[in-house]
Image 1 (cartoon, one colour):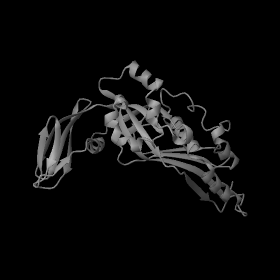
Image 2 (spheres, helix red, strand yellow):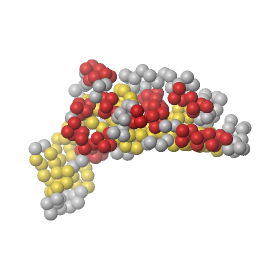
Image 3 (cartoon, rainbow, N blue to C red):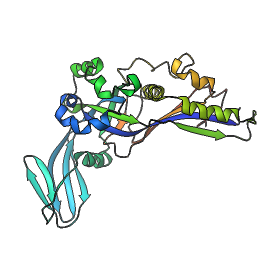
Image 4 (cartoon, rainbow, N blue to C red):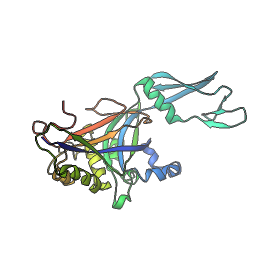
Length: 294
């Protein structure tokens, strides 16, 4: 219909993951608080428990033997020849000939295990946000007094799984996706539609973007414990979307595409995947064949 169509894009640029009980361990959280302060989106879910059985070093290969859901997997890593393996009080480390000590990053090993086993999956049960005044509240502030987190814990977690949190840091500035269609019925001869898209990109503040990102993910994953946005997004009745409709945006796009994420995300309606690109059209396709139309 229009020569110029816009979509507002949002994505996570970083993450922090921890067991649910870890939110009360202030000493362990202290080194991460500088990053957590910027995490305003959180996901609550279940992840299979992982047991490290042993670690072996042969030649230039470091192999971790890890058990998940009753099956043991080998996770090999290449490492420089000449290192020796040290095991003390349940922890493994690598020592160089000069005496330098290197820790084995468990999250990196888990990310490798994810690809080998295809069972390290985060079952999304709830999605929320915390922002406060000018970003003064972060996800951890909200989770410390979170009724739904407590409810999920009290209902019971299977022995094979662990209640886990994923905190996301979203990009403070949004993205603008624009399609120029020279065959459209209505031309943008005066550049009004182009400028409206640029204005919307700059006028949408961080709190609005976080709300749109949260709502987009809820509508996509349809988590068991969420209520708001599951059946009411997107909608012309939502205040946070009014400016998108006024400037005639075509779609919203929300992404979780983080290579290092140590698990795949899924829900009862979304299969496990390493990357999730959520697309919500703001108009019916029969009226506007726009972004990602088949």
